[in-house]
Structures are given as C-alpha cells and as structure tokens.
Image 1 (tube, rainbow, N blue to C red):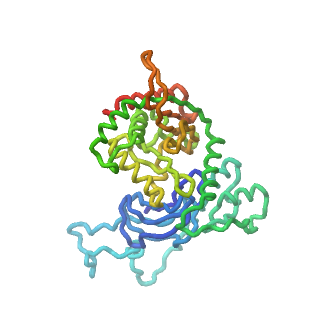
Image 2 (cartoon, one colour):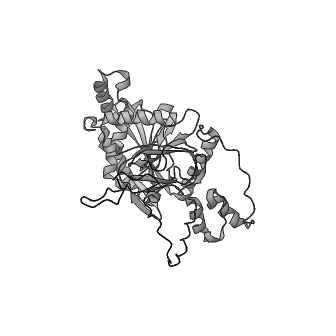
Image 3 (tube, rainbow, N blue to C red):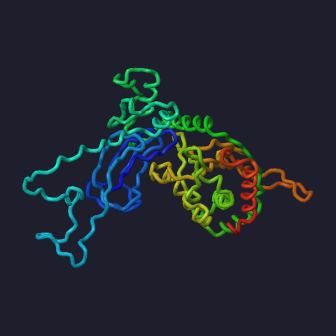
Length: 407
C-alpha cells in the first residue's frame, strides 16, 4: 500500500491547503492522474499520483492545512481477479469488490472462539514538517519532547522555535495573519515573503560563484529569420527557444550543474528539466519545469514554453512541474535587463541568466561591426563545481548557438 503525501512545492514551504479532491475512496488511478488541488504561496497546484492503484482512504477533508510530507491519502493495489481454474467462493460473481478494498476483502467474522490477545497497535508515525525536522537535527533537539500544534498534531518550525525559547509547550501558538481563501490567487506580499525566505536560505547555505560571457547571435538570428519566414506569428520560434536548447545540450556535457545538493552530497538530476522563471502579472514568480528539454526539438520547446507560461499565469500548473526542475533559467531580456545574475534555487546547484539581445560593437578578424549580442551568466554551487567547469559550460552553450541548424 502506498501513500500520497503533501509535496514540497518550495524551498521553505511548510504547509499546503487542500483545496479539493478530484477522487473518492474506491477510485482507480494511474500514474500521472490528477487527484487533488493544493493551494500554496505559488497559487493553486494540481497534484498527481505516482503509482497505479485504488484510493483507499482520504485522510484530510478539503480545506485542511496540511504540513509538507504528511500523508493525504492511502493508495492500495488494484484487486486481482481469481486465478484461472480456481473455483470462486459460493455466491461470488467474479465482479471487482467495491471500495474501500481493505474493507471489502476483510474476512467475514466466524462464530466466537477463544483467540490469543492481539498485539497492541503500532504507534502511528509522528508527523513532522521537513523544515522542523531539519531545525531539530541541527540544534540537536529531541522531537519527542516537542508538542506539535500543527494539523493533526504535526510538529512545525514554530513548535521547534518555541521549544528553543523555553515557552510552555501547552501554550497556544501565537496568532498569525489572516489566511486568504484557499484557491484564491496569492497576494504579492505573501509571494514575495516566500521568495525572500528561499533566497535568504540560498545565500546563507550555498557558496555561489558567478561567471558571464557575451555571445554573438548573428547566425542564430539569420537561421530563425529563414525558419519563420512563412509562418504565422503564433507559430514562429523565438530566440528563447534556441537559447534553452543550447543550454540543455550543454548540460549533457556538464552534468554536475544539473541536479541537487541534498544531505551533504550531490545528486544528479534524472533528466534535464529546465525550470523557467516566470513572472506573474500581479507580482512574484514561479519556476515550472520544461521536462527533458535536451530531447525536444526547437519547435517543441517553443510550444512548451508558451504553454507553461500561460498555465503559470492562469494558475494551472502541476505539482511535478514545480518540484522537478534540475536547474533554473531566468530570462530578463524581455524586461530590458542587459545582464542578470541570479540566485540559485535550493536544492538545485546552478542557475543560468539570459539578458537582452541587442546590437553591440563586435570585433572579429580585425574588423569592428554591430552584431546582435546576448549576455549569458552562470550562478553555480562551489560545493559541486568550480569556475573552470562553469566557464567551459558557457563555452559549450556558445558553441551550440553558432550552429543553430543542429539544435
């Protein structure tokens, strides 16, 4: 039996609000099915299941505020049909038993007979938010001595902080600011506080190093002009798609920039999933993933980019798109920035910044002329890579952009 847990959809996320269930006990689900909608400071996020089975039990009603990592539902295996040639019990029609499966398949009670005393039930695993657990480990505090004031008795960061300060654990938690209605768009202040928390953690924990380069986009621009010549405006490929493909292909050569730093060690990403930093109309950002960017054509990347930006601003992102990015890419060229130096989004280990493509003086073969030039930057984690490898990565991105027909 498996469990669907409240996912972590942000570096400092502690809770999510369960907006709605899209399944009920007895529903058969397959990997990738949307089963719930969760509200966070990023807005409403659709939650998928990652296994095939039957929803046995929904552990929280809609409207509950649930800590990260806590089980939301229990998922059982699909009921198997009777084996060929095996006689069915009397009255058995062979139909799939109704849900919940565990209850339907429970043996019918026989006449009372003396039985051995059942062992005491195993205590339920204590609910602790990941942030609270990390704080307790760093401060060497016994979680068993802390009373949880979160949903269902879960221990939260506030509980650990209260324990440090010596406040009575039975004392009610301090009042918090009024919560917005679940499913309503997050306010700019709320999102900026969440972003600030993630950036603060990043700058505190990650030893950043920064590199930058300028790339001549003449060949790429000429290739795009020919490609788009007979296309309608909505079907044209923008330079951003070429840049994304070049970055993705370069990451194949430098996998130490594509992954996560977790528990004191680097963990390579399971694919090249570019997290696109998307600015929202009312303020704030989200960073959804474009999965397997290195295997997609330039046209497919352009379609994926348009789709993810549209859904990010409409509040239609999936949980996997928020949790899967293996590296982030921020493009502020369309906002007028010539150069952007980003902050790594933990637990990722690198971020690529793309500036504005603009005509600049360019010297080549002793001649000076005006060329379309873009500034690319890399922010990387010195615990995993160094400036030598980071510089070669930027060279690889430039090399791909000089041969756009191969992208």
